[in-house]
Image (cartoon, rainbow, N blue to C red; front, side):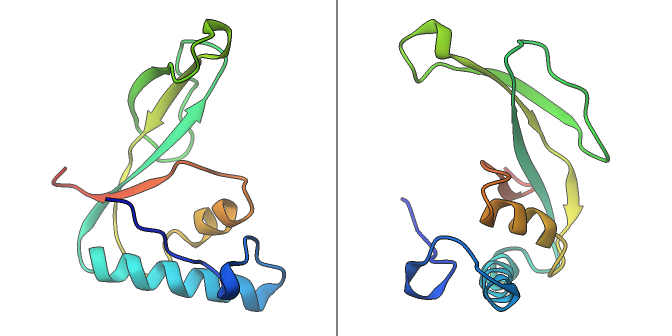
Amino acid sequence: MRVRFHSLPGSKRYPENEDRYAVVLERHNTILDELFAGTDVYLITPVWTTEPDAPPCHGDAEYWESRLVTDDPDPEYRTPTSFRCPSLSWCRGCLDDLLRDVANDKAAGALVTDVLI
């Protein structure tokens, strides 16, 4: 099942000012609070590279696994992808920097899930 949450009124794609960022953060934090309040979560983030070896982790990120993305039939366009999977205690606002980056297309593919997966 797929669900789409509109981040901005009128299905706008990008926040244009701080008021719109506040709307994006409020909506995402409300959903994440409903799902994960008071629990630990994994934050799974991809790192796409041109080399098969996983690049070094930064901060508290932990290497989880690597995969070769093969959705393109041309081998030249297959992408080595490493996944980071740190655990954290969910609290409202703890992912605001990441949510801002996603809203600006500076980050993509982030998944938040409970630690029971």
